[in-house]
Image (tube, rainbow, N blue to C red; front, side, top):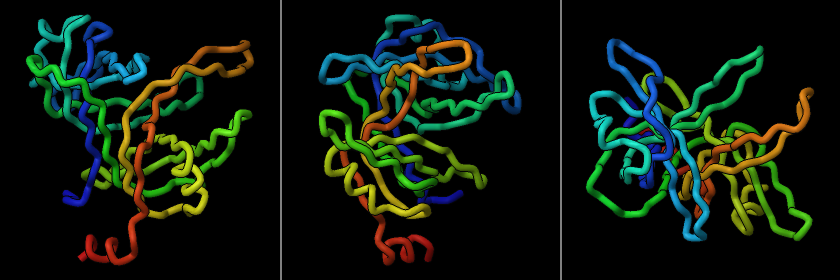
Length: 210
């Protein structure tokens, strides 16, 4: 296992949906539900959570219950009607039912997958979209969409594909409208809103690889 892997999520909120069976691996069942995490602005982000039966207390994970979770952001492709969609979920490693801190913190260390998309809104706000590949054990990777604002967004315009960066932020949901052959559809995007980011220096990379 790569001890340099950094993919950490700490999030709390109210359970927003019933727990439903997701999948089974080597006899271990996994379930999923949605968690409503409140921002300082009062807006709620609704985040998908995946959890093993081995740490899940179904009675205490009922709709409306407050839970505190530590884990990682995971991604996978969902195929439907010959189309692929990137699904983002919080993979739970620890869950607490008697802790009431309101948190939503993410730390990721990964590699730029494609050139960041830097742009300005009609009101002049600077935004940049990043797709970050974060290594996982057993030669796997999670591909995590991130969004930067202001001077952080402008800074990413210097980044090249393959560069190693570390980011700090929060996981959030965002509703948007997409034009399809069946008309306009309302969809939800999941991404990490970046509050701080660092570009790894060459000497740091060499030290980690020793």
